[in-house]
Amino acid sequence: MKWSRTLQLVSLLLFPITIYYFSPAIIIYGISEQVISGSFIVFGALLVTSIFTRRLFCSTLCPAGAVQDIMIDINSKPIKSLKIRWSKWIIFILWIGIIIYLIFEFGLNSIEPFYQTKFGISVYEPGGYIVFYLVLGIFMLMAAIFGNRGGCHTICWMAPFMIIGQKIGDFLKLRSYKLVTTDQVCIACGRCTKSCPMSLDVEGMVLNSNVNHSECISCSKCVNACPKSVLDIRFSR
Picture 1 (tube, rainbow, N blue to C red):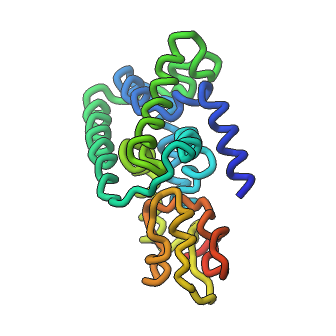
Picture 2: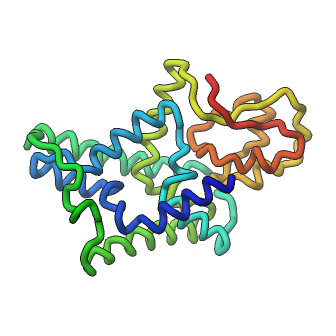
């Protein structure tokens, strides 16, 4: 969808301003000083909103996702084995463990949405661009090595929050913005699978009557690629 590409571009251009609001390190630094930072608040909001929007953030507002989509021109190969996605869960569990430990050790006494920023701007001095370009470089490297959105599968510390949120939504049987099948008949052309930026076997999912996958980012590319309108994306239980 054109609007999602526009939002991606805007999010990437604004990344020097917003990078600290997506930073796992800022959360740790904040807790060590008994502060609930803006990043802490953003991650909590992602968990709650993903109950209803699933991983729509990944295909519309994620700067790291935007730069990885640009990298498709360099390495467009799909990731054959999604087993590598467990690496991000190892990172996530270790990170959450540190956070829980620090909360019990130091406690939380204040809320500072603009913690470690200047007037809400993350990168406000030349040294800050070292962190900025390092983060971009890591995600570009993962995409170059592994293929389509390699960083999303391997190192993304935000994805687990949204996956947990969508699992909560599914458990509660709430309406969420998700991929669904229509009454049309699949002709197994494979176009949906080829178009998926997350390397999912969308055709196999359709033929197995189960298109609910935790790595789906609701980008609608498979919907647009299907010549028979077998797929749709909408709010559904």
